[in-house]
Image (cartoon, rainbow, N blue to C red; front, side, top):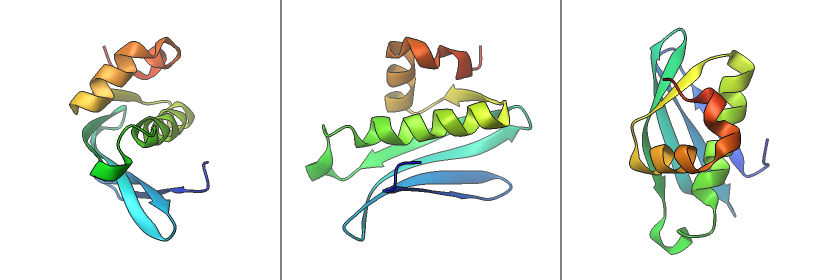
Length: 96
């Protein structure tokens, strides 16, 4: 896992956070839909940090997480939806 990223999860949801210099500058939140899939419902990066690939780094960590758990992703958030569509090597995690 990227040393700037931490993952916090509970029974019903979770988030991947991007921390830089002790400050949280990005978050990707998901909720558990059922035992076989999660829904990415929100991604946010501080405005001054947009365009630096932080959202994609968060999504990459989430992809690794779901592959390890053998579950699928429903990308409800626009950023996650578009990025997953554009990244062919991540198509295996998308719930169809």
